[in-house]
Image 1 (tube, helix red, strand yellow):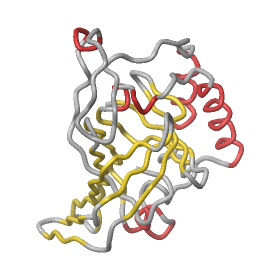
Image 2 (cartoon, helix red, strand yellow):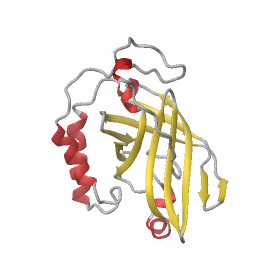
Image 3 (cartoon, helix red, strand yellow):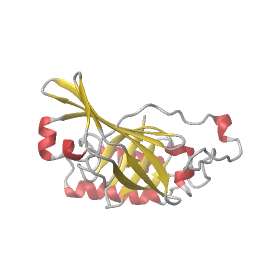
Length: 219
């Protein structure tokens, strides 16, 4: 999911969060590039009203498409406030894993490519935009849509690499498209970089390498 990639798309399978017992285990290494601590880093918790505020501002906006300029600014202002409560090294936290819904992006085409352009939205009615992050290093993006009476989906599977404590890179395989009973793969690999600016049990905020702001809500 991402942020500054070529046509983006999105599929998933749920990844359960660690149990309470697991969270008390000592740190251990995952068997890939991502190192994940099984305990969330301590720190101040964001006020619930900030989380409720950002979700209320993006609700019913078609993931940000219908927001006016000042509406986008309001979302960005709340995101900056939430970033002050971000845990240290969020990419190492088990909180990043799970199934997420894309509820907002400041640039409509960032999480959906041509399917989210003005023309694309006229033809493809977006039903769902989701991202699954599976331990230790798998990312699956999926955009579900309907077109001319047929259900369809564009899916991407990628490998997650940690760049530093907040930045990740995901290299995606060529996208797969399915419309009705027809399915095919097209294009080549794509790459996105995303900074995790806030994450908790309910939401995750990210900023792409070109400045796109994303709001994800945990399913």
